[in-house]
Amino acid sequence: MRLMMIHANRFSFEVTDKTGVSGFGGELHPGEDRDRVEEVLVAFLAVEKGDESNVHDVAGQAAEQIRATAAKVGAERVMVYPYAHLSSDLAKPRTAAEAVDHVVG
Image (cartoon, rainbow, N blue to C red; front, side, top):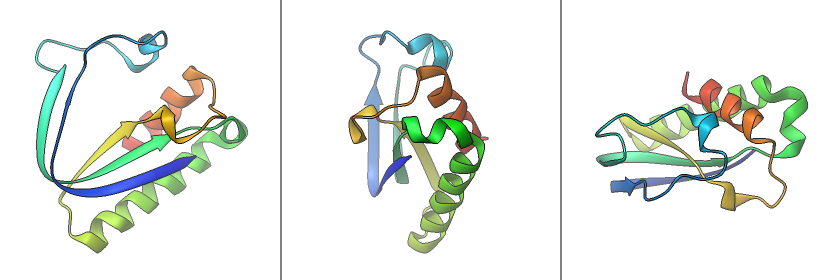
């Protein structure tokens, strides 16, 4: 798993289109297609093929690393943002969704 974390004054996003694998992340409800968060640690992550055999352990390690970084920088809010551009060796979409759910959960 690849992680890139940014402690930001503000972070915003807007869903502009569905991807071919968007069904694995669940459906968006009205009002969930955009947001803005203030004073946040944004954890961009990409799940890789090598993570597939041990996805829960890898996701647990990532979650702990995110928690530790949030504590270190004093961030009270964390946003986990799946970001496939961090790797060219991505896991299957279903595995990636499972990993993200485990990191968040």
